[in-house]
Length: 186
Image (tube, rainbow, N blue to C red; front, side, top):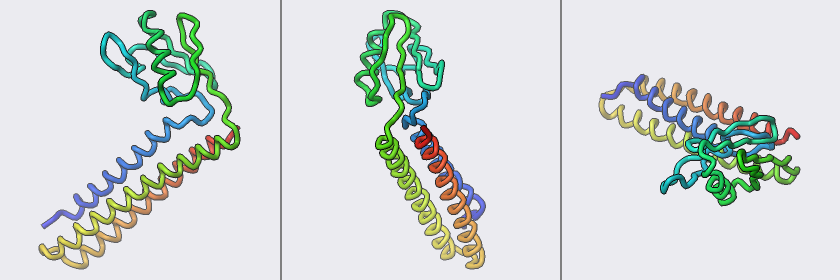
């Protein structure tokens, strides 16, 4: 027989992971403000292997519109510049020989609307994931009735599962609203 508390805890943990995935994905979306997470996915060739940018350089944001990249090895500056140009970032690096600067342009109204659509799409995928998790655990609880779980316990557990689900759907809506507000603010 299953442990209802453990089952609900596992469901909550999966839903929490989905929200963390959403936050991580949204951090990579450029909102017109400099954020070091924008360059997290960039891989640089260093000594024959591909490594993350933050392992070959110090990445910082000296002001709200600039990302500064200071390589630890001055010889790597060309490789870093090449990696940024080849990435999907869409920003041309400014190289002065010691520091690479990425100037984040102010997105147009149309671009901001595209970004909010992109965010909402990622949010919808996360909601689908949470609904799928709820469905799987609901099925687990129904199967547990056949294995000897009381129907009252199963119904109570399903209600608790629904409350957990609703809490995470609201959390996703809040995360998306905050990100959309950040994007639409000029």
